[in-house]
Image (cartoon, rainbow, N blue to C red; front, side, top):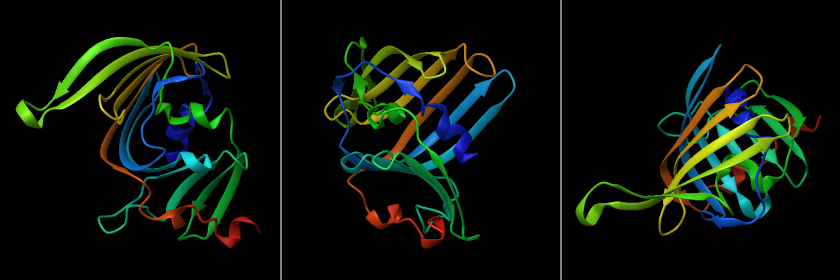
Length: 200
């Protein structure tokens, strides 16, 4: 299930240049919902995003003591390869990544995005000022995506991203990602270590 939802946006391409981007390295929870005519997927993932090294990690089987569980997928765009790792079973599969790193996970608001206006979460002095944008993309398979993203106004931290896809496999679809507990920087860089059994 991690792979299904995480691969959905892996082939998107956007206009070069950006209006804004979040910090180059961050950790966050992602609540993902994907719906099309045949499938509904809801999942809570944890993402570790390393823009400095063009890689990110997604895991879905955490517990309260561990942010990264025993299964994870590491997308390494410098090496042009991804690893699906199950540390408990000591298994690993590799597959090529598609597209460019800058286009993955839709974390940057691309140049040319239409401003939909300010939004406010909370109230009074504790409110979070945010900005909402809309833009269109086309993936490598030719499907079209209308993306609406809401980010914090001061530092472009993603809050929610909603993507409507037309012409894709399985028909039209809706993909939403809500971000929670966003933390700039990387708490533990060793989460990107590739175990020896991946290279066997």
